[in-house]
Length: 148
Image (tube, rainbow, N blue to C red; front, side, top):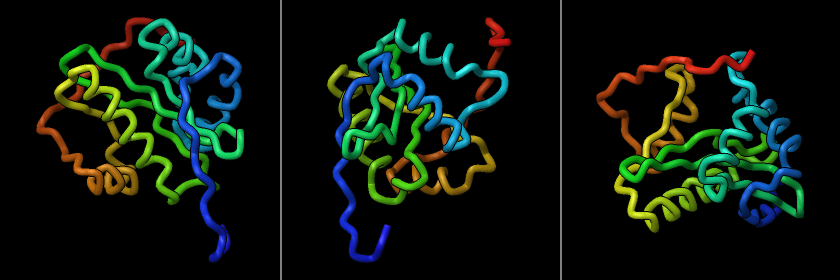
């Protein structure tokens, strides 16, 4: 972004099936995909559960951001928060997080959690600036369905 360029506003809306390729490309550009998680299957799984909580952001009609939000009624979770590299550091991720927090608050969800890879210092700093703190928990996981 040039010194005098004003950031274009981001429009946030629910994900639509036609967004699939753009979202997968975004996640790949942001380094969010992993070989053991098929992003297409992750999208299909989200569309089967609370699809209204899968949001994308557009600037000038171009999809450039995403976030998956989920809740079990007690905890909310954020997944796949991504902003295209050329649109980062303009407040878009902050707006997506604020929108997710609002949606969860409106549902009566009392807390929001997320997972960050320990070596991702930049994103840990981003969330810390938004008031998130490291929880004194250990996350355990077990794969129930392989994406191979």
